[in-house]
Length: 317
Image (cartoon, rainbow, N blue to C red):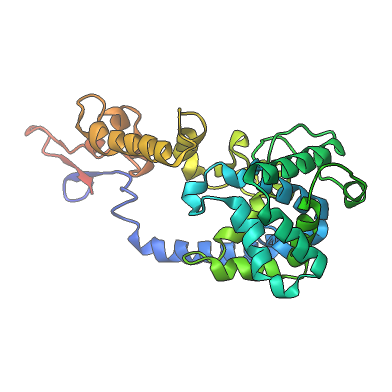
């Protein structure tokens, strides 16, 4: 009681009375992040390059070339988004033509034989080679976009294959040579007009290495990879809504479907949620304001004494 007045103290709102602490908290957070950064490091793995992948798994590169030529590689699933109508031309034929100055006479003859054959003959050669390679590992014809791990064929078994493959084995090994000496990656970066890594990344996704790495780390669509990071169980949690649209909703895995569903969800939360009576009161019913305020401002009461008591009770705000 002060001068006949009783003051009832109420906890302050953390929004209106803690501004001076924000810079201090921010500096502390920065310090903690820097220390953890040095102690833990980045969860990301070293960058995968065409040269590294082709050196580590040459059999996977041979398989990818065969599937690019017979039309079953992962790059065929959505060619219009990548700006290329024919992955076989983009990833096999064009690089070989550009490196004609470095090809041996046998390699040049193989390329000429393939180009002079009919499209049906080209595909048949590649399909025969693809199936023969898959038999060495017990694989089924599933292409590079399957969500199960792909066994990587060994070069020793590939070298022992015989059949009606035409010049495809020679073309595949020539592409492997260009990949291993670093030419192929420089070529793709040179022809990429907008994103210099676009064709490099698509080429890598045709290899078993990329899919197997994603499966191992739980990063594929069916493993909810959009909301995970390599080495950590939780990643960008804020992508949970786009992930649901991408994985669970009909057509969400395609570009137009993904845009449609996310647009619909955004329309709901931005327009319908704030306007519909009852629905817009859900945060109040859930008492979400307690995440912002220490107390509900409506609970701050000012109690005044009756005239007979002569004592006033005020809230200190």
